[in-house]
Amino acid sequence: MKIGFNEANDRFCKGHTVMMDLELCEKYGFDYIDIQSECLDRDLAAGLITIEEMGAWFQCHHLKMLSYNALCFFNMKQTAAEKAAVMAQLDEIIHRCNVLGCKMIVVVPSMDMAERGLQPTRREIREDAVAVLKEMVKKCEPYGIKLSLEFCGAPAMTINRFEDAYAIVEAVDHPLVGLTLDQYHFYAMASAWDALEKADGKKIFVWHLNGTEDLPCGAPYNNDEKRMWPDAEGDCLDQKRYADTLKKIGFEGGCCTIEIFRPEYYEMTQEENVKKSAEVTRAHVAKYC
Ligand code: ZN
Image 1 (cartoon, helix red, strand yellow):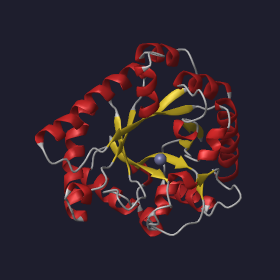
Image 2 (tube, protein in one colour; image 1 turned 30 degrees about the vertical axis):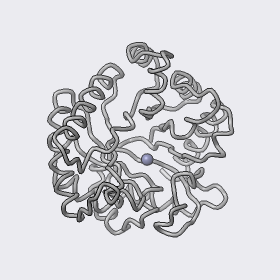
Image 3 (cartoon, protein in one colour; image 1 turned 90 degrees about the vertical axis):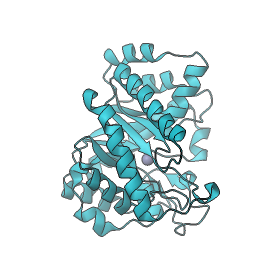
């Protein structure tokens, strides 16, 4: 099992840059990195780096880019202009991925429907997402780029449980469309273990590793900031069960990617954070995979 680093881990560490993440991930032995779009856009806007320079860097290092993380809020668009904007964003991300040698785009569902005067049912959300993903994958096909739908375990998210994301991916039924299993997201809205246990592991493209504090399902303070190192003191996740289940259902993603958004970990230096992330991920894989 390879190990991956998601920039969620350290993105607010003092003086953070994407290029420093690449150097540090290489130094501490990560095989893959998920680049966070917010970090990348920030560094591009500041003129710190160009996509072409990053592409050249990847060509002469071991570290590879696992995913572009992410195309946010792809679904439930109401107007032609909103729908066109998603497709234009996808075109730009595909262009970047081709330069960076990246073969996967994580897509994140839209949120806050009520604030937009909408109250869609699960069926309406499913049908919309299936139609949009079918259209998106046509753009990805010529380049062999995968789309990985990441359900997000928060009440306001349109796709917030594993079983809903899986039903969408099954209905799209395309080898380039799968989903991201993020352990925190799975836990936070009480996704069903029996649904995961019955799933085809080949449809899970990305595995996001983390632990979390044990908080009520749907509580407003049950959020990404409560994530922590897996098996740290206070972690309530059954780490063995996640790893065993993925193995049993035939997960072929080949990489375990650590992804934590804990503010106190942003107090570390960027280097301490990447070093610790590598130690934790390597130990996890050795213990459970
Ligand atoms: Zn994630």
